[in-house]
Image (cartoon, rainbow, N blue to C red; front, side, top):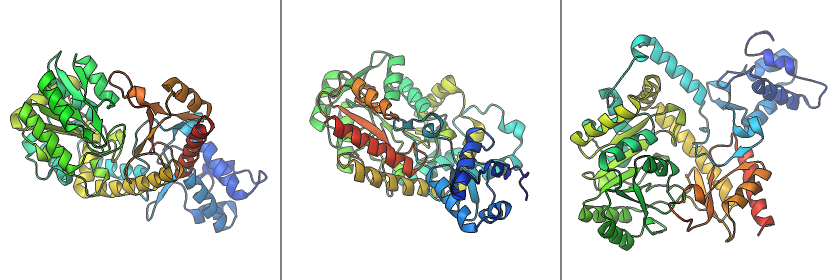
Amino acid sequence: MNLDHPSARWLKRVKRDAGPVYQALVDALATAIRDGELQQGDQLPPQRTVAALLGVDFTTVTRAYGLARTRGLVAGAVGRGTFVGAPTVDEDAGVVDLSMNLPPPPYGVSLAGLLKDTTRAILDHSDPAVLMSYHAGPGTLGQRAAAAAWLAPCLGEVALDRILVCAGAQTGLAAVLAVVTRPGDALIVEPLTYPGLIAVAARQGLRLVPCPVDGEGFAPEALERLCAVERPAALYLVPTARNPTATTMGLERRRTVAAIAARADVAIVEDDPYSRLFDPPLPALASVAPERTWHVATLSKCLSPGLRTAFVVAPDAMAAERVGAALRALSLMPAPLMTAVATRWIREGAAETLLAGVRTEARARRAIAAGILPGAQGAAGSVHVWLDLPEGWPPEKLHGLARGRGLALVAADAFAVGPVTRNGVRISLGGPGSRAVLTGALNSVAAMLAETA
C-alpha cells in the first residue's frame, strides 16, 4: 500500500509542522471526513501500515487512532479493523443533539462493517430484480419467524399468523389505530406521551384523554374511572422506559392495567421500542393480555433506525389480516433490502451481538449521566433520561439557553396532551458520537441549570 491507495490518500493531509504528529493525524482524518474524501464505513489502513507510510512510531499512530475513537470519528472491532464512524450533528453543525432518541454506537461492533458484509451476502444469494420489486403483504414466513425470535424474550412463543412486518413503528401504530378506533373515539394516554402518537391521533380524528399517573404509569383508580366515563376505544402506553419520563411499569401494574382493560372491554396498544435493551426484559402486556393487546416493537431504538423495520403482533390471525390491509394502504411494504438485513441479523445472531454492544454503550452513557445529573431518572440501560426543571422555566427559556450553549433539547411541551402538568426535559444519550462529546454536553446542561437556579 502507498499514499495513493484510496484508503490512504487522506494521509497526505497530515501537517507535520502543525504540532504533535498524533494530533496532526487526527486533524487530517477529521478534515477528510468533513470534506467527503472519507465516508461513513470506509475502512482505514492498519496502524502499522500508517506508521510505515508516514515514517513515524507505531505508538504515535495508536495514540492518534485512540483519540479519533474518543472523538467519535472512527469505530473499531477486534478482528475487523477500523472504520470511519457515523457523522454526527455535533460534528457537522457545532450542535450536540440531545433531543433525538437514538441507540448509541454499539461498543466493540462496527455497524458499518456488519452492514457491508450482510448486504454483500444478501446480494450474492438473491436475485436483485426480485429483491428490489414489490413485496406486498405482512412479511414472508422467514421474516415473521425472525420477528417471533426477536420478540420471544418479551412475549414468549407467538403464532406467526399474528405477526406483521412493517416500515417502522410509526406506520405500525397508524395501521393499528386505523383498525381499533374510529374518528371521534377516545384514546387514553399518559399526560406526557410519544409525540408521534399525538400526530397520528390528530390525523385520524381521535380524542386523546390524559390519565393521571404515578411512578409506574397509569394510576389504577383514575384509569378505571376514565374507562367508565369516557368509554375509550383503546389505551395507549409505552410500558418500558416510558417516553419521555424513562421509568418502567412493573409486572403487577401491567397485570392491573390489563384487568381494568378487560373489565371495560378496551383494546390496549402497547408501544414497546425499548424492552430488548434490558436483560431480561419484563413480560410485555401482550403476554399478560394477548386477547386484547396490539404490540408494536421497532428495531430503531435497540439496533438502528436505518433498518426502518418494526413488528406488529395482533391479538389473533383475523385481526392481523385487518392490520395488514391498513399497512398496505399506508405504505404498501417495508423496504425489502432493509427487511432482509434485519431478518438475516436476527437469524444468524448478529442482531444479538449488535444489541449487546448497544446495551454496553447505553449503560456506560447512563452512568455518565448519573454522575453529572444525579437528579435525572432512568434505568441503568436506558437510552434517555428525564430531568425535572424548576418552576417558572417555560420551554422557550430552556430552548433559548440550550441553543446558546450549542445544545438541542426537547422539553415537556413536545410530549404534553393538553396543558403541561410536569415541567422537565428528556435528554437523549445515544445521539452524540462519543462519550466525550456526551460528557461535555451534559456538563453544559448542569452548568446551565446551576447558573439560572
